[in-house]
Amino acid sequence: MNDEILKKYDKSRKVSDEVLEFAKKLVKKDVKILELAEKIESKIKELGCGIAFPVNISINENAAHYTPDIGDTTELKEGDLVKVDFGVHTDGYIWDRAFSVMIGDKNNPLIESSEKAVENAVKIIKAGVKVCEISEIVEKTITEFGLKPIYNLCGHGLEQYVQHAEPTIPNAENDIKTELKEGSAVAIEVFTTDGIGYVKESGLTLIYRFLNSKPVRIWEGRLIMQRVEKDFHGLPFAKRWLGDIAKGAKLDIILNQLVGMNALHPYPVLREESGSLVAQTEETVIVL
Image 1 (tube, rainbow, N blue to C red):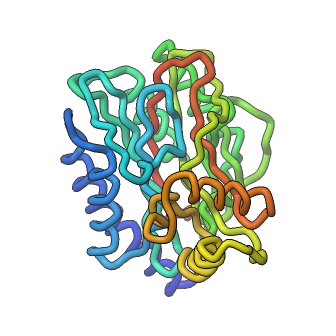
Image 2 (image 1 turned 135 degrees about the horizontal axis):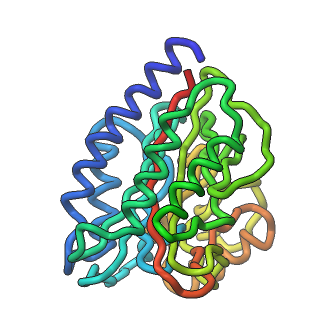
Image 3 (image 1 turned 120 degrees about the vertical axis):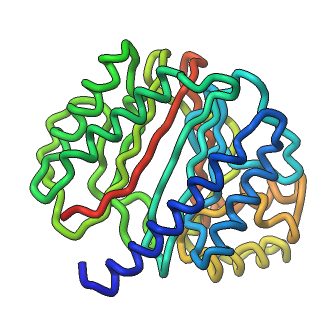
């Protein structure tokens, strides 16, 4: 990694630090999640960085990929376990962060275990460390709390304009001998649960990513294709970011058509299979 790229990562990191503290103060009872997401996204741009992906605000059994819909009226309430996942980028160099809050409870073991697992994993990050060594520490830390990791969600590498790159870093023990490379960026992303430890796709999709340019008959569809290809650089985008082009059933029909044509990749909301609570913590690290 050359000095110029390192400077861009450093800018993303510093902005993400500010955004993290800003976002933590906003997560409170009776706050509308649409307002929360929009404030965080606006803060990222205000501080001079790009939004790497739509702010995810996944509540309770929803583990990932929930971002508010157009006109979403959902409010945070007492007892909600709220996961806020956001990404900041400078010219495509991404810093990925996530934290969890239990509304009305400051000492939740799910949150504590995810934070501790990330902390312990980050301590051993250096060039030459194997993926299996990181995963072993993550699972051991979580099970010491009497909890489970989400076995089918993972940490990941980061590359320019690529949010999920190699290597994949599972949250459970494995035999992956891939070694971390000096100068690479990785996101240690830990999910914990008191359920069975697996997520499944729900029937709801609120986040997409551009794949291929395709001809579309509906003029709103053409406008959507033009925007997602030009503005988002291949990074994920929110359905609500297209609300000025189309809304309601019409927007759903267009997006479903574009997914079917392999023009867009969908990210369905992921839910814990047994309906149990999930906490999430994530930190990005440059491997030295």
